[in-house]
Length: 337
Image (cartoon, rainbow, N blue to C red; front, side, top):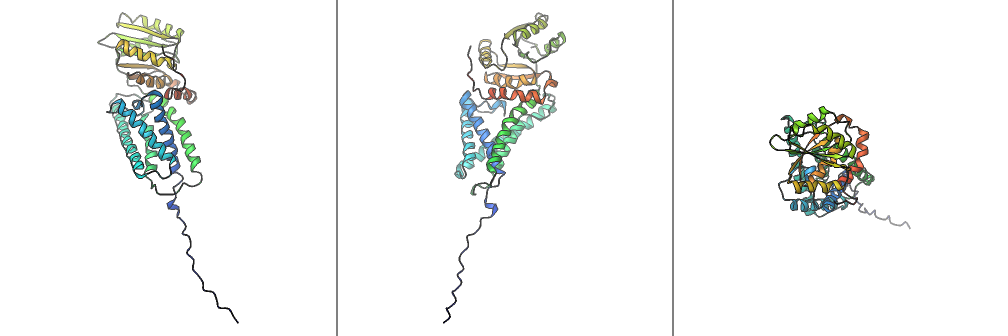
């Protein structure tokens, strides 16, 4: 007796998820950059008590308290985006909106920089502003946030891309800071001139006369020499002949440099005791970069005159990266006078 043939049952097959439903690996680059910028903002706020966006983005039309709160919130949102696979839509939307607003403002700053350069107000051999680097960072984050959020985890290799993107930011930000902002001159005559004399060649009478073009025309000029005792003494001799001619007052901050953390308190003391609001920074590209940040943190508005641009090399810029990061994030104990 033959057995009846068993009916063929068509079992439902498990639908395979298409690759379109999976987060692309390149989006991990955006998350790695978001980790970097989120941590950077939070450390700026909590280590210094302020965001100091003015040195990397420009002056914002908001009180410092509002800027601190917005920087802290934005930093937290970036970290949530970077480490959370499926953050709430409202959180992702807020992160996307804040990133877009900052991106738009940074593009405006780029436009203003090129407008000022075309008008002859800015002299830079690099021909690109440092804020363009910030625009790139925000653009990478914005593109990642613009991708669909209801997807599975990224493909294999995403974590490696995120780590590479984070490490590149650690190198590219200070390097572009030195090469772009450190070589940009926007000097005008000033009542207070902060002259970092270290890392500059032996002073000459001609060098002193060239700098005298930026002495104040209407008020006495205070020239502050910063550097080692030997170098500041030599520069003082070169400027001594200009004291009576230009109503010049020479002050020396000898035995220190712009890299010393105690220099921050000296700048604050200068602002309070002399009622100084703006200052002209003079020095080499490696000195200008951290000096500008310390000046802003002291509550001063700086302009700058860059000397010896040709002395800047890739090797010297790479050596300056650790000290510049210690200027960004003062992990070492800061001495107070």
